[in-house]
Length: 315
Image (cartoon, rainbow, N blue to C red; front, side, top):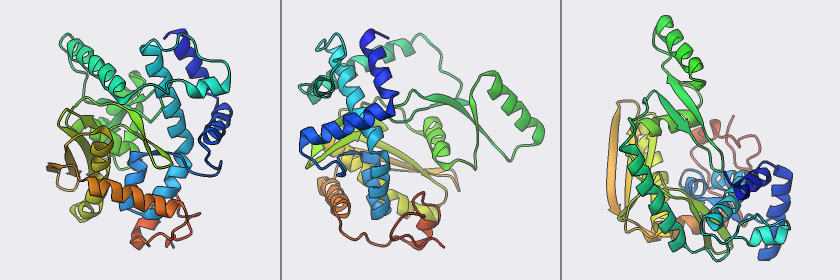
């Protein structure tokens, strides 16, 4: 890690400073400070699950996506030789990377992918027991899935093995979000990927597909049962269409794994530009004050925003 990246790490670990920078960036853009600007593609796609949840989640995560936006600009500016030190004044820091193009980002990511492929030829694959869990803007940590239906002796051995390797234990029927990440790490098809941000109206939209090739953007999801598949599919398609729309790919490849019967449904279709733009427009309408449509009442019961949501139907 060079000095630019060490300085960036200090910024990214200071949430108060990041909040200050976020407000300054909104000022620079002429946006009201209470206006949502930085959003993630995955959160916007939740509009197809619940219109209100997508906006509430985006507001809760805005600082994270702003941090990702800032970190990516600095990281690529450093690699391209645009800077050799992190600016010390806030305005110059926010201006770093303003001339980086999407073509620049694609070129660097292609170089990384070639190097990764070369390294993989010389090293055996890691055990699938452990997977690395990454959060947007975070360093990541390893975790192990533990099957609660195994006998006590087998489960104890699993837990001891995890402790010996300093990895976190995840019980498979608990912690749904982490369980989904682990399921994806173990079952999803492996493609290179990249992360970048794009302007859309007054928003900065941050995205990182589950995979991306010259031909398609890849999205993987899992769902507990076939009855939930019809609710998961619109979200997965919206997310894949948004990736294809912003990353300029002609096709999308979507896979949804159904845990109930251990089957995986696969679709490969042209990117639906109308669906991508419609998702963004519908998200924007609720964000600026339109009344969201009521979701199915059962969705509210497990929603993290049920206590504060104005349309929550949770009992």
